[in-house]
Length: 110
Image (cartoon, rainbow, N blue to C red):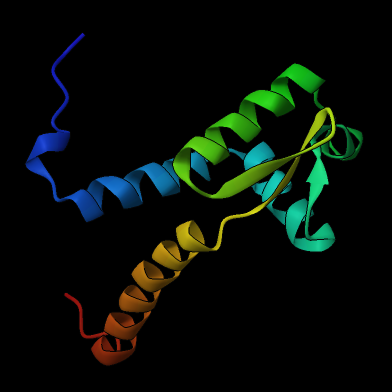
């Protein structure tokens, strides 16, 4: 396997890449949308919403949590998941910057 090139990029660029990569799967988008709808829930509730097996949902939750897009707190035997505002704020600022650029360009590209 090749050596990673992430050292050539800023911490912000690497962090945004991790955040957006974690969102790059339709099941994870569905999980995020479900959490928006219900505010917080346990894995079993998410499994009931998606056409995926529990281990698959757990793996997607793990990826979202590792990226910083969701957080989980123990409630008895289960973990209650909700969105992590910090991760989404970073994405929001990135896309606001792009949007501001596009508004100022007014289709002046090429």
